[in-house]
Length: 375
Image (cartoon, rainbow, N blue to C red; front, side):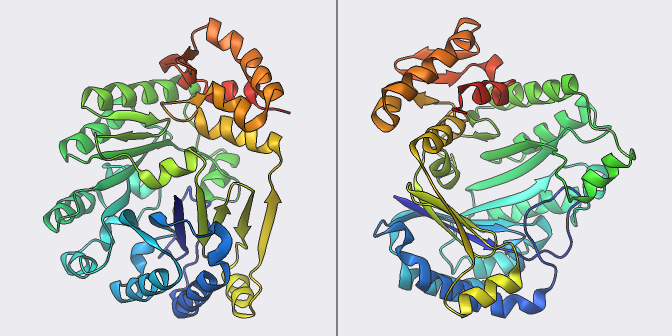
């Protein structure tokens, strides 16, 4: 099993909080697509002969590409990779790009899942975040997706905005439930360096919410969505039965994946690598046949740390017996020794040879993971 991630770096404008690589110059769209197709030919051996089980177009704003653009890309994917039957194929989209005429043409393509960056159903929040859609557009986009047969829908929500109240956050949760969206990813607002949001905080123009309030937001999220029938299968992800994201889950379970496009990351269980975060440098490197890529060879200790960080994010947790098989007796014993204080405090649960976060442990997951890592 393997995954394919394609980074589409185009946005009309940058959101206040975003630190993902993106570009607002659509004039380089055609050179980008040509380079993307050539990169497939140059790097297709990275994941060996494994069939592609999931394809994910992320960004940026992939819905800035036309259906005709996607047609070119899918033709190249079919040429250079083997796509498994029943593969999950996801398009990230901005709500105001979702129009009936756009969806009509998308139906001719292999997409079977749409993930929308709604972020909030509150117009004040959307304006603050510098999003380019309004709440009404998001609601309409959901309805249009369902009308055109895209029932496998996911949305992103953000909480913990400066000044946001618990009631406002509850409204966002209830709106997502009311719209019968089967998959929800919810993230706390983070202040990444080199973003406009970080600069505003640094200048004292906005104040982050207090940690206690953040925990209330997160607790409300868990309570409301689990009550509504969602499975909390990863720290930030909730799904109705049958709608867990197969692509994202493959990251957490250590499956191979290849990332194409500027800044995209790849992993083949032996090394991980990432493309240059520059559209001109990416295009030039691919066109001369030597893509600009940095590599990290994974030793057993790095792979162990990866396993802890990704595995403990999930509801299932990590298999303790697998620790010894994958990393040896020393690292298994180290992990269990480090886990004992958290098991005693019922922040970690050790059952049926599985180690996972308890409900209370989720709230301090970063600290727990940090203590289990090999340093």
